[in-house]
Length: 195
Image (cartoon, rainbow, N blue to C red; front, side):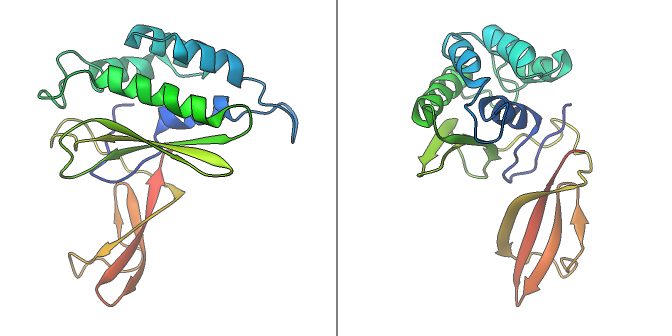
């Protein structure tokens, strides 16, 4: 716990746990059997402490994971984005909106995007016929704010961008991505998650 991403989208440990509990079905094609209790808990989580409790008791998050959230994302004043207030309030209201949009039939797919140039905290909610995608948009984490541990598991996420170094060739790795292709001066990175 305590790892940060360096400006690109990430599923992250907590978002994965949230999606797993919201999308859980006891039997293939059966109803979402853990959704109702979790949705009720989140809607009532008007404080970070209540959110952390729901994460631990219903989604399987560890105390270390919720403490990390308390000390970084939802600290008051915020240690990562000191000029931004109401981080939890924005997050919570956005999360509830996403849960309202999934209803009883759609899947939830959640991500964190610490985007360069972002000056605020926002929750983006995109609804399709099969799922609701929830993106927690924040400014980047300040340099040195946390470790950047090597991630080894390929994620179903790609970033296509301009090549910034001749070293960026197929199989070139950074702590959270690997180059999969180079076409001209355009690089396709595959994001990586834990473990």
